[in-house]
Length: 145
Ligand code: FES
Image (cartoon, rainbow, N blue to C red; front, side):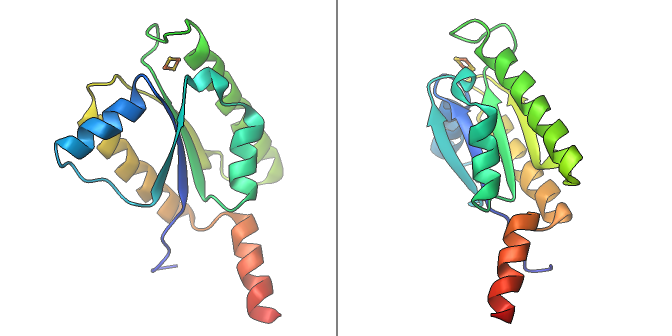
């Protein structure tokens, strides 16, 4: 588990988190390369099935990063995204998975440092949890077969 490098998917709103990631890059604030960014027009476009699919495909953790509460360009996209993330957390709990594998985060476009800090902290959390059970099972099957 020591060498475990998690794969993390971050659904980032074009108007805030994606721009914040850009800002982190332009300020040369580094963040873990484990985080794969998927740009979305608004976090309201991220459905529970997208998060579940990412986990099914082997992501060890998934977070959705949207505008600050009250600042969504589509009014309620980020609050809907939070509800979906909470729903996925509940599903994971029911499956016996750690709900901490998914998260909703809010930030503004100017928060490059927060983007980098979030990526780092989330990566640390997932490292502590270990590989996603699906990925772990696949690795064991390959080792046996
Ligand atoms: Fe950013 Fe909706 S526009 S979360």
